[in-house]
Image (cartoon, rainbow over the protein chains, first blue to last red):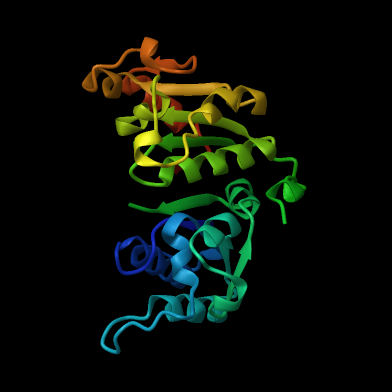
Length: 119
Length: 131
């Protein structure tokens, strides 16, 4: 099955991003496809490489980048939501790109399931 | 770059998208940013429904005035939805009742549904996105 994933919350303050990551990783482990993950609302804050969490905590952004690299996942950050929150191309961690909401709608049209992780 | 430039995914597939609005219009950004997704989905010629439930019913309430909190009043957008061919607006009866509201308190024409009717409508959808 092809899953599209929508992440609507930023890292750390809410568990939504962790749950989305674990869902994506597990789905792939079980043989499903996760071609794209879309970041909206405060979810765009998952994408900044400027984040430096303490060493003894998980690095949410780095974890997304690694998953994307290993499995060829397209990590898309909404341009309007990103600009509103000061997220720009030069701040993006590896694997992330900025694009429009059309990329989210496409997931709904093309994939078998669209799963939302939010508050 | 404009979202409107990439409206066609080329597949010609039309799916039933339901947008579930659960939050008050102000206090969080979900309602405002959620509307953007609804409009883009309509631009992709998809079959769009909007549901207002829980505090989401306040998004459609008459007489909203945001001057005091110094944020944008986007309630006009709900009146403009018809122009984007978004005409399927549903409101949860229980949520209205719980807040002492009736259809007359709302700024647009809606269909009020019982819990069972809402459940049936949701079951018919291909994609449900909740804001």
